[in-house]
Length: 238
Image (cartoon, rainbow, N blue to C red; front, side, top):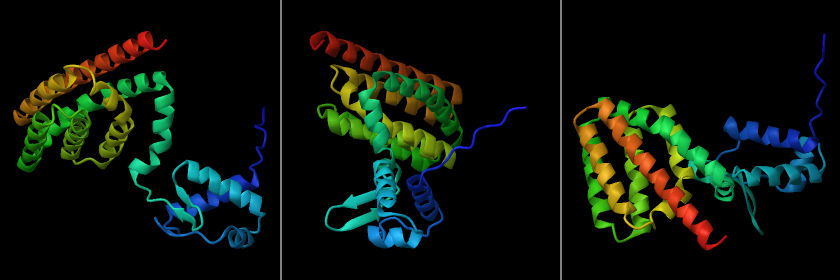
């Protein structure tokens, strides 16, 4: 018989957990200002250093926002804001970005297949409009990248599945770095536009298998373009 050792939780961790619980249950709402550090320490029966450390940790996660001269506020809790710390990790670690592409290859073809069975006329109209936007933005890489992300988001929205929306949209947001790089590669925007048209054709035909194949082909081409660009950068700046 073996026993797991009891792990002591620091006071600052307990404070952070208490604040997390209050945010999760709605006692602390997005944008709401927290009491001053001294008052919060008194309310929780702990020292100010523990409160300060807990707030700093939650701020690093994007859950709290510290405004100099104003105080500490609950963050917006929007996905884009909460994913900012992970974006930094991905930017610093090329291997993490490769793993992100792997995740997209697992999830997005299935998303496209499901969307093909659930597409409404309004969804198709939205996708057609985005493809038209991309055509007009071929000379503007940054704006094209934004339209590119909107195209993928529109497909997952058509699935009408909140779990898939959360997962896929997280991947799209975390992939902003790779989009910024690949959009600068010669010819990649035209290829992406061609791929998007192929995906849209499959969705319009309500063909799940073809939609999945078209999405997989697109993601593989984007991944290869990113790998080629990264390799060239290393050669130029070893």
